[in-house]
Image (tube, rainbow, N blue to C red):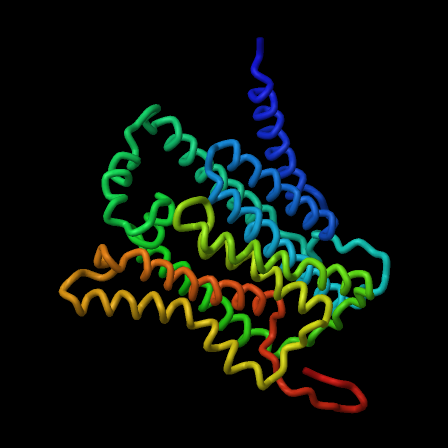
Amino acid sequence: MTDPLILFDLLLALSIVALAVTVMAVRDLFAAIVLFIIFGLFSALAWVRLSAPDVALAEAAIGTGVTGALLLKTLHHVRHVTGTLNRQVALSLTPAVPVPMPVIWVNAAFCGLITLGLAMALLGAPQAGPGFDALVAEAMPQSGVEHPVTAVLLNFRAYDTLMEVVVLLAAVIAVWQIERGLSDAPAPALGEVFQGFARLTLPAIIVVGTYLLWKGAEAPGGAFQGGAVLAAVGLLLLLSRLYVPQPSHRPVARWAFVLGTGAFAAVALLVTGGGRVAFQYPLEHAKTLILLIEALVTISIAVTLAALFHGREPVALRIEGGRDDA
């Protein structure tokens, strides 16, 4: 008898491939974004089936939730710029200037080479290699935490995680610099129902995000998952206009942006001062230092993702010709 889970996995895999093809083929931007969000949810479910709940949480929170919100806001801004904000028209992916056929063929050739390289790497990989499970399990007593994923991210390869936090910091700096000269699209009127929904869900989201952070030491979760969930608090506050960024808030936001990176670097320097290499935590303080890093990185991730969604740096309003400009 065929295992029902095998049929489910096959159907899930086919659905993911079909959604990926449809996202690239559909011409309406709003439909493409909605399909992309569905694609992310199906991908998160696939990671669960592959016994990778940490990746599934990150995919659902960041790859689907926050990224989907950023895409929808970008579409809202594009509609404002093109003058179609209040009109029921579909924005097409068709470029105003046709792409030359040689450019299309060159891109197709590069995509084919990349696909061929990935296929060769997959077929040439060992079918049942030992991996790093044994090495990670052997080093777990010195990691300071009980969950292997957290040990890898915050101890064994902390440099990589530090660079990921630096990338987020660089992203928000770039957005604040670039969007200074762009016109700001008016926020949609969400109404009292959405504001009531935000007030009801905000406490629950805060609890879930904090729980994911705390639980990451011994189970799936951690700074990125908790920070992404807490960023949803910022998105709801911004969308519902329960919070409107003011110029006076910029110093606090900037400190929050660099908090995670600064904590990471400070701990590395502190450890090296004791005669160790960077991130070689003393065993008796390893869990405390990792928890401190994760807590501060969570704050930075949450504030940074919310700031990326908001976009431009908050500046004082000025009135020119009867119009308010930000």
